[in-house]
Length: 364
Image (tube, rainbow, N blue to C red; front, side):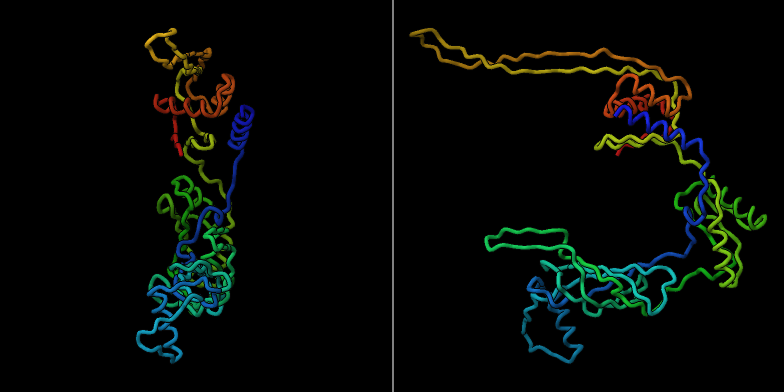
């Protein structure tokens, strides 16, 4: 573990010295060009007795039969153990056209035991505006399984009440995109940063000319673009492949208290501080003594506890941090005193409480 800390510090310091260029398409997205979520309610049939019989399932089943001109007598309760009510979800990528197919996920919303072997009936998938954009139907692929014995024993693997249908939905209408509107294209950074936004705008201006791009805020960069859609595609293709150097992240120390993993950012600095590292071991041993009265005495035999407490304190070591010390200095000092990851977490917490760390300490 000590060697691991040394390697971690050395690697981060080496990366800090190297300039890292990134393409615009890797750290930013075009505003308005995104996928859209679709959802629908439907029925899965053909289940081998693993379905359900609930009020909403029976109601949906009767409504489905009525579409084919079949009316059940009043008061008739259908046995629908081979039917299950489900929610169907899908994600419709940007620029998906009518007639294309998308994947869907089917999940039981009732008491069905398994959807394995079922077939999804025609289900309308709606968007946020309530309009139908796709229709789903097909045989489910369920990776989970379940088995139950006569004595009540049961085994379940993965999740048998959820499945997928590859290319299970047919797109019926396109979702309007603002890509071809207006005189500008706006790029939104995946991670907001004022410096990165300004550097990105400067890179675009160096490529296209002055005043072609400007940073609106820490997230968005607006670029003047041609109105013709065909020209706009070629224009965007050139812009998104431009490379520039994003800004370095803020100084952070992230500590995972469960696994003992500690990640220290390259810009973390330490203020003057002195730390003493030592250990104390307390061992408590319980001994039981028997007290027995003499012969022909009237007393009773009793058990008396006898506690043996031993305290062992290791020699403490002190090390001093000078102003402006970096990650490499911190790792070297901690390894010199032989601190374990748990000790390092305590040292970092103490330094943060003392105001000796220039950066954020995040414990998860």
